Image 1 (cartoon, rainbow, N blue to C red):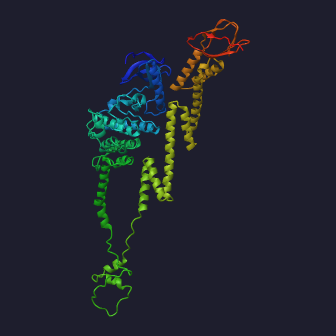
Image 2 (image 1 turned 60 degrees about the horizontal axis):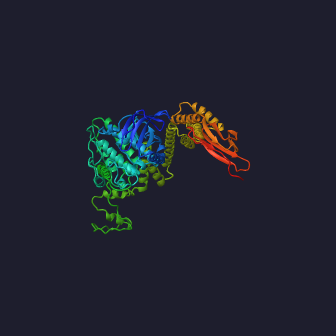
Image 3 (image 1 turned 30 degrees about the vertical axis):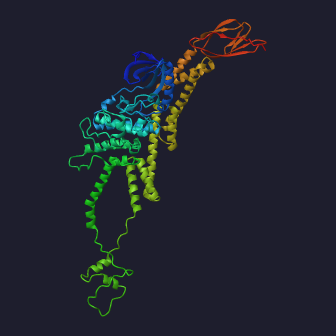
Length: 623
């Protein structure tokens, strides 16, 4: 792009400092925002003419509104959109740190740790109803604290008619459909593949046909030469499934698998020599977490999980079954009872007096030699009844729930404990587990709301912060510090509202009744300790508007020397042919009166630059 250079000022507030990057349709510059008194990243798009820039700015304002509501440490904040001639500028938070391309070829542990931060940010955005739509290496930024941040969410204004990057596009997006959560899942798989292998899937000859039909080769080692864990390879394959129904439903499942991978790696690194090796690098818990989030289908990793279960069953046969067989008493078939007489045995030695009829069937059923077995059979206990399946299911559900509760996996704990409650609602153990779950869910909700409130305070989104603090108190009115946080947020929310209302009435600062309170409001806002960029910007804008309104401008009035001219809130000018008057910028109402003629009323606006023609006031319509 031509015409952009350091020290150039755009939109009367952004002084360019240095070029950060260049894309197909835009340049991104580090710039000083004189209105906010902060450095920003300024994305500059040059279009055909000022009218096109104005239209693009209007479109982007609407598209960026949901993005501006995203407040998360893993998402780059967007400040606003400005037009300057044939340029449209998007002002964003400046993130200066590590280059995302440095992750390519890194050890898989470092890549997974970085991707957990990305997935967490995506999970938050999806919960707010926002899809990224263009997830790739270039859209990850590393900040000075070492955290990875998401930027450049896809916008329709830049998508229609533009070239499509095939490195991260799903088969469904090839048809031009709007991106969905499932497309972000696919793009995350392409991103992970790119970082692990050093190039996107199907590189270098990526075509739409190959994306639709060809399965990428599975990466084997990372850039450091380490073999990739099988669970990680299978996760990439699941993310890159052609059908959305065969991909993980959302980012929660992906995040659980990535976290489990790092936990397993930490456990392996702490293992001492001589410990029993794991059957596989793919933890069954990892695969189960991913499997539980799938809708249908039978991906490769599910077959692997089935193989693990089969191995577990085989181990039970090899180790448990012999023990059970050796410990279980020998039980012969039960003796016949009176209701089922046995076939008569051939007589051995006739006895002069037969035994009682009731005992005869039992004696005939026993072989004569040797005699000892008969009493043992008669004394053996009856065959135990089959185990109660509902009791077993209850125990399994309760055990799963308590294990998940101990691990902090509240969603899984809720599902399992609810199942146990359905089976035995009055069981004391399940009631205790339910009480623990309720307490943990309350604590988790409070922690989440407090974290969101702190993020909103940092972003100076005061009404939303007030709502979060109030939600915490609705759960527990005694949480330490929340009452003070709520009071402070309410005060700032009120100040923020007053400042915005004053700015909205800036054109009427030529009226002392409006300008006076605005000046007092500026003084009140300036006394706030440690003001953030939003408050500083409001103060500067309000000061600037008051300063403009305080500078009178010469205005020429013309009449017919017979019309009495009055300017509301200024005074009666009497009659005259021509008169110049010093007026402060803003709107005025001018009225002309003359006996026998209809009054004339004109609404005028005094331009701060003084560029306005003479104001003509004459009563010329006779009554």
